Length: 100
Image (cartoon, rainbow, N blue to C red; front, side):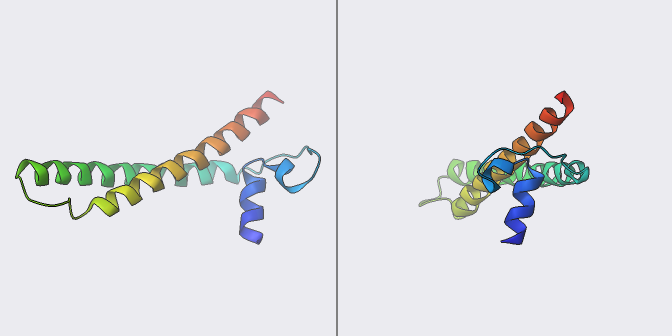
């Protein structure tokens, strides 16, 4: 999968592609990717906050049953986790390059 290969290389994952570690420079596109991920994190965090507030109001008003948007809240939480992991991999790769 070409997209998976591009993402792996951009995140500094050469050992996942080759049996031995390799050295290469990560393209400056990481800064753009990191900025996009941060923007998505911000948007998702805001949506999660809104959903949590709505859920609190839902249960405060003693409405019966489960909060109707609970599945979306879980989905946004999982999305935030994935975005955080992607950002961390890029950040770690960038830190590694700055030390070499």
